[in-house]
Image 1 (cartoon, rainbow, N blue to C red):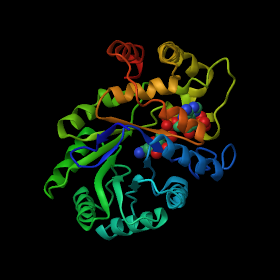
Image 2: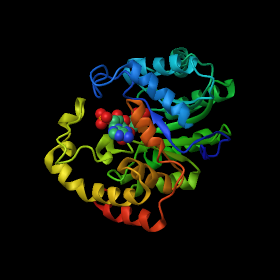
Image 3: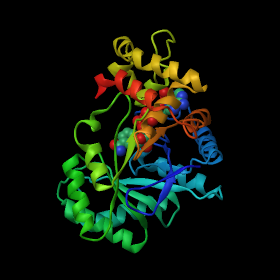
Length: 315
Ligand SMILES: NC(=O)c1ccc[n+]([C@@H]2O[C@H](COP(=O)([O-])OP(=O)(O)OC[C@H]3O[C@@H](n4cnc5c(N)ncnc54)[C@H](OP(=O)(O)O)[C@@H]3O)[C@@H](O)[C@H]2O)c1
């Protein structure tokens, strides 16, 4: 399995990460309706079998259930698993002790003593300054409970500030986790990608399949409708589907050359950007197996550029 290093750390992970927001989340993803814990266990097993041993979760996903599922599933495997979870900077979390406590609770749910990556979920600074926050995280690296520190949804300037604060402690900022796909390319124009490259920060691309749109299964002919909160999202309605048809058609056309699906091509395009790890969210083993098929082959430069051109409206 080809690996990539997280920022300027010595932590190596697979080029694809498994997203587990849907693992236990009833509100957005309707966990319990079209998929169950049994399928999540099978999805986990399929990921291990495919060598995709890097999982992204957060304390808020399914109100802790996502971390709990991972904790249970990890117990049943001998494979080396790498976990990235997230700390939510809520307004009532006012001191460094809150970071320590939140990490203890996540580790307890995950049944682990150490995780590879701990990320700040959003750039909110209520009563705890970024300085207090970054220092509290640096303490945890020194304590050995986390391997690396990341941020999520941070702008270029916010990322730079976090990077500077951590560098005073001699610790690199490993990642910024941001929304990035062929249908959400703002990070290319708002300075996030350029700043990440300059600072040596790896981009973890969330919603890399545009929450299922880039699989091509939601289209004007199939009549397939998304479950959960996406029902309200205009991108999944007729007008939205019409707009993305040129992107999906090109994904299909290119995919046919390699016997690959639109999802596999869309994930491969993100990996081709370099310094980017897509986090593909999954609900069942079939989705894991398909997404893992994004690895081990490469689009040509011409194909990467064709996809870049067709998706320019989403820059
Ligand atoms: N840091 C943040 O603020 C943040 C925000 C959002 C997400 N994330 C992370 O990023 C991960 C991924 O993002 P996401 O879940 O929003 O979007 P995504 O990965 O673009 O889409 C995931 C959804 O697409 C469908 N899907 C995935 N693979 C498929 C396949 N091969 N064939 C058919 N359908 C497939 C599934 O839903 P259906 O089957 O229902 O269509 C799945 O739940 C999350 O799990 C989470 O770990 C982080």
